[in-house]
Image (cartoon, rainbow, N blue to C red; front, top):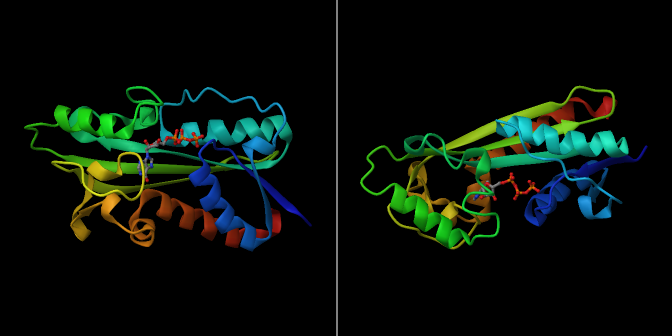
Length: 199
Ligand code: ITT
């Protein structure tokens, strides 16, 4: 039987990573661009998990097909968890991250408590089934200055103490081994392995 799944994301990087994981497992993977008249839902959840479910469930409800969505972001303790679920929209969706990162560093100037974390929730939705959600985090500190050019988004200012470098100074493999998304994807893989018969 063909196992079909839609990756409910407008982010090409996320689509590529999920494709790499799911195609070897026999899934036929579709991106949102292949769907006709897809209605983008409002991401109005209060948590990453709620938003991941909103994005995946919208596709399952509209097309009657299994869907996977990822919602993620950066929480800074001294800023009451900002930018949090607004990470992609913080200071404007299309504002360059070099600017967003500079603003965050300015807001953190002189602040002693630099604890922060990346959070990733992955939701899997299927017709006539409850959503399945995996949430993982990676604990970090806000760097004093941006460093590194790998990765994306907030990576240059997110410093991972056990390796002594920012997320943007890590290779893809290094980041994947410890990251919020790497861990959540492995949770999803383990769940899929244990539920082959019902997919
Ligand atoms: P979709 O909602 O269409 O999947 P998106 O890129 O808008 O795509 P999110 O709403 O989940 O995705 O926003 C995630 C934001 O969180 C992203 O734009 C970054 O600013 C930040 N972020 C999440 N994971 C990150 C990582 O590994 N490295 C750097 N920034 C990250």
